Length: 276
Image (cartoon, one colour):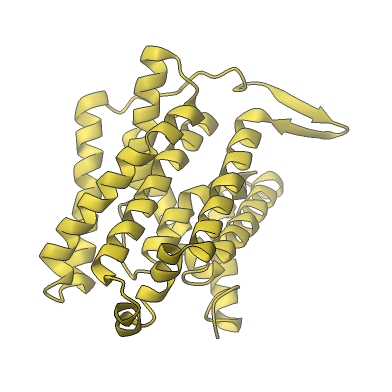
């Protein structure tokens, strides 16, 4: 269940970083922004957190489209996306974090829902619903994205844009518009992941930093641009971290996860599902 949640957080980065080569280091901050949107609506109107996340998907999609237009105009069009683009997202991450701190402080925020705090018992196995519900939603969201990427022209164009830009243009697609749509989808998944995050645990503006290294490791481990590989890698990291945290202590969990990444890269540098 923890791994499924990791997959939801890493899904958008798998598209932007894995397929577009856009190092959006601010992605976890957009996840936290989604958590705060869900918190505000839930606090004032009492709507279900997952429903709020789904409703705000179009808003975050448009935010991603606008973000790419700025990124393209300032960096990609001039060929400065490598270092300057990274600095742009790094600065954006801190700007969003500071704005959240100024608006809501550093207190932890949480939401209310009927399933938070309840547990299903199946024999000797317990399924806390605050983890099970996000796991199911993550699986559905990942499945929908995989279907979109594999069955639609835009989805296939997104996969092709980083492989052969000229061939994509010959097929009648504008690479700039394709990347614009892709980044919009990547940011749109962040609001759903943010809803899942605040269901699992209370959040405060700097929580996103804890996920930066982990989700980049998941994307690389699964294979650059492979959404199914990202999901499998997230499950692997989640299971290993839970096992290590239970039997050896939580401080060892991140180290073991990165150890798996290094071992995989040594044996199979392209990742689990990456192309040779």
